[in-house]
Image 1 (cartoon, rainbow, N blue to C red):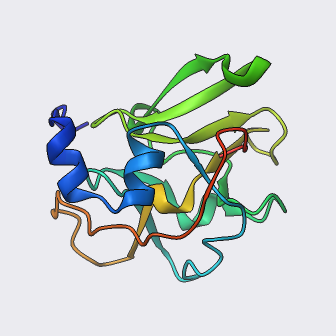
Image 2 (spheres, rainbow, N blue to C red):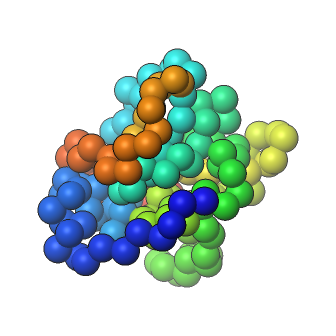
Length: 154
């Protein structure tokens, strides 16, 4: 995987929309069903913070939760996982392994072949159609739609 990206809080604030900053850097959760418009064509979902490829369209599925869901990352090293005990719950947080941005959570209730559901915040993802260049390290600002409380799944 690519070299680790480290930025100051001010640099992240300047790069990201308010919602993207709250989700990616402050571990927030966007409201469900605010990112239903992702294309259905072949492509890759990259980190909105650093552009690292995270998930492939082929592993995306409709979980009915209102957040983009995948059954596997493009590479096991693309994401890091850590225990999240916030709000009296025990969950597994998913982070971008390159820039440590909060992406969402992973749950053991997904489809085969993995049985996992990577429940991601849509604002944390940048869709790149197949064949598009993936050498752009700076992802565009994510759009600012509503932010849910930190008690959501994403």
